[in-house]
Length: 305
Image (cartoon, rainbow, N blue to C red):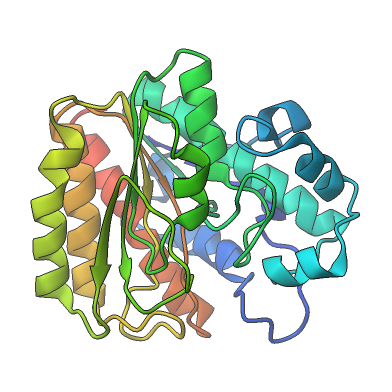
């Protein structure tokens, strides 16, 4: 028994010094997993970068073409907040390919994890909030369009609302978008997910987990989805620079077990993606991001997947 773990070396690319997006966390996470207690329990997958036809499952052809050619105007680049260079575009397409690969592995084996992904602020025709392409929306649309999943639930627990995902999927009756996020955090103008739970600043472990536990049955039962994509953002942590909530490491670990166990107990395939996390200490950040993946390994063994 093993967990399908999707990783590409180009998830880490050169960024400007002291950029707010901690690009080093992807390499730090992979190194943490490689030296951790579950290192021999991963089935490693190197994803193929997404090509234009796949990206157009969720994005407009004009936006896809402009990004792939690195010809976005300065205003569009400022809205994204990261330089749109050939290495960054390669990283963005590999991240989409990684989430698609994780979804396909989860549908085949029950559970899988991408060591990147969760770019939920990218909309159909523009990027935003450090997000170039919306890997979650692309993967969900691809799974549905190819007949692999009739009903898809997105569980987004990043501290920031998944506004791009909500808007891309808002007219798709087969998709359910759930976002539990900080009420006063980015984006200022929220979209309308299928279900939104807005949390006040300072929300801690107990209140957070109670809200989540109450919400999960409505997402996972009647009708039961064919696939869950889980954005396990760690920016609700009390030490996160951009978070404003107050979860501890123990609270995050309990959250990961709650979501993944509820899915697997129902026989619902689940793919995890990274989501946000903005601590300047990338080693601490890697340990937090590893919680979802390590929990997935334990549960894959418990459920004999």
